[in-house]
Length: 203
Image (cartoon, helix red, strand yellow):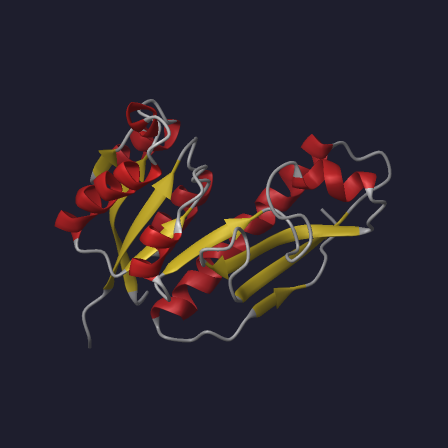
């Protein structure tokens, strides 16, 4: 049995996807969490990680001002002692530059709350509702230097219901994020890049 892949999880907020990923990496799973890192010192997910006995790190982006390169150098330095094989972005609200991404090419995943290539960036749920879409969802993809652009590894769809607010839709999509991200990570850590598709579920 080969050694487990070592996974670093990057967060900026409450860390619900992080918790789901950590809880999935048990038993015969090919990966294990080694560190949860946040760019926000008070991120709620840090306390959750500590409660789960996962090492935590903070690299506060605000201390670096507009100097993205310096922030990413500090990020790399904070990750290095944990020797991660893979990085999972789980609500990490910083755009990473080519300089950082190139060092992790083929080893970094992200989850985005839309059916890419639709609605890259922010406010995805409001944009899907405003466009009159019947279906929304989330996408797990490899991270490349282009925002929300890399190869798609998994998508889960949910119906957009009459009268949905962006908050209603976000809550329904989040349930599917918690299904698809662990499923993709398990396969990806085992070297399987085939995409997973989950069809719409009636909330």
